[in-house]
Length: 179
Image (tube, rainbow, N blue to C red; front, side, top):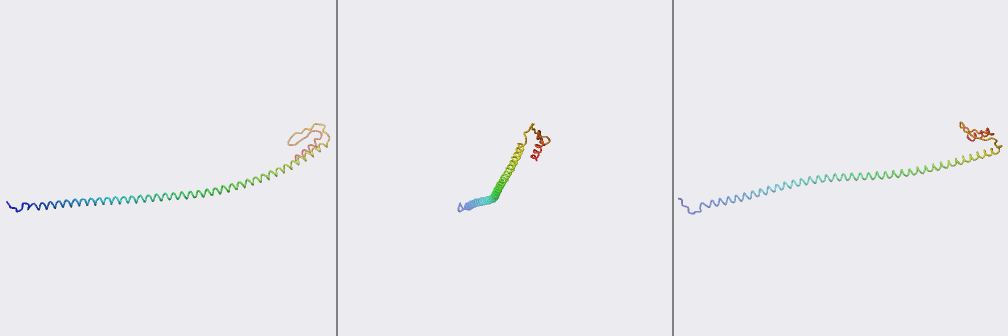
């Protein structure tokens, strides 16, 4: 048997080896934790990049929507402006038409009044002529002898033919009145 001076002489290397293994295990745990942290950081960075891209896309979409909405608002404003101009033009045209219609009505009333005046003057002249004709006829009729026979008037072929004692004179006189 071999003689060992120190009974623990062979155990020191085992302890050192065990310590080295423990240190290696601790280093591996630290490395594992570091790699885990690095992986988590990379994952978080990727998520942040994805979120930033999503935010960018959302902002682009929002800008497009805002631009589209602004464009529609501008178009609506332009249409309202054009409609207001057309309404003003229509109101002006309607006012001009109303004025024109009023002037035409005044002209028409004036012409109607003139026509009535002329018609009244013509009727007065006609009435005067009839009065003169009737007066002259009644004077000539009174100046003649009283009729011995009955006088009758009949219409035949648009001629008035009196019958009686003074038929020929009366017929000539009536024909003169009719002409």
